[in-house]
Image 1 (cartoon, rainbow, N blue to C red):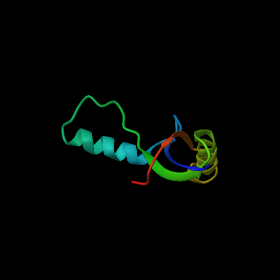
Image 2 (image 1 turned 45 degrees about the vertical axis):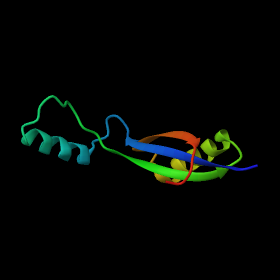
Image 3 (image 1 turned 60 degrees about the vertical axis):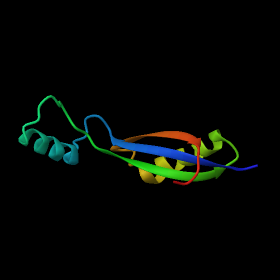
Image 4 (image 1 turned 60 degrees about the horizontal axis):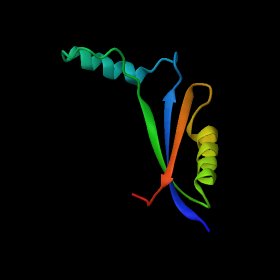
Length: 88
């Protein structure tokens, strides 16, 4: 029997890869007088809703999608978190 699963895929630039968006946010943050933030790096969160028989199958589907389409493996890393879920 199949169930509904929610997968959260967090995609981030690899360490050492320049993050122009993060640098821009960091620059504005400092220009407005804020201190104490050493660095800002941005990523993206992708929510998926999957039909799968179990959490491991849902994770495999999400990993395949993340590694093949959502993230550029040369520049980015990703993490996947799976939980039972309804579409939100």
